[in-house]
Length: 277
Picture: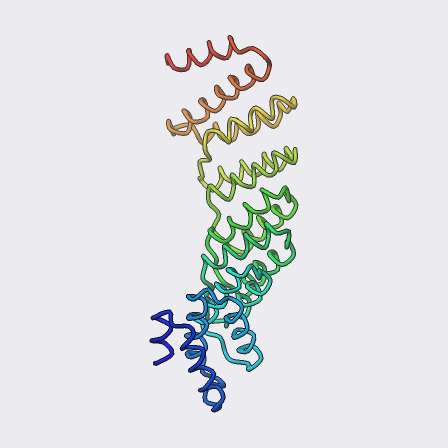
């Protein structure tokens, strides 16, 4: 009770002093509530090193970590940029405890963006193996980090894991994956992702479709372009919104093609025609 009050008042120095006295008496060997309060107080006071030392003590004492303690320790690890420790703490959650999704997303993104690819994938895979139904937030954080790092193979692996593990996938998931495969010139993968998004009933944004069609045209991939347009066009029948969306994407791609081909006057005329429609 006293420790919790000190933690809420951000009085970390007093909390540490009292914690030390109580621990010396042997009364805190398995008191996870007290440990959580002191770790939270340390985090509130930006005493990251002390908070992490307490987290290590808790592990040594084999204290069963509750979600409050774990999330406080993860926050301390994040603030101190100890990403591997943060990932390990998240993995130590009990089977009945769901991880804090914001903390998980942050750790996944930071691990991946710092080239700790293996750790990020192991953490994500380990949580899925425990049967946790993760939503798209942590998954998209991981995909985004891989996309920015040009790690298209790891992104594809993560995407398969999300899909096979039942993790929710949304427009952001597919658009991130498509952009990654476009940069890697993996045209068949791009086509497959667009088909999967379409089958899931997701309508990706206009600039993405425009970029895809433009890349297909520039590389002479008429077969892929026609296949995607046909697949999407079949669903567009009876769906005026999607039909207009696809028509606009094709028109924008035509304008981009004229601009890149050094024909600004023709591009300007095309834009004027579009505006007049």
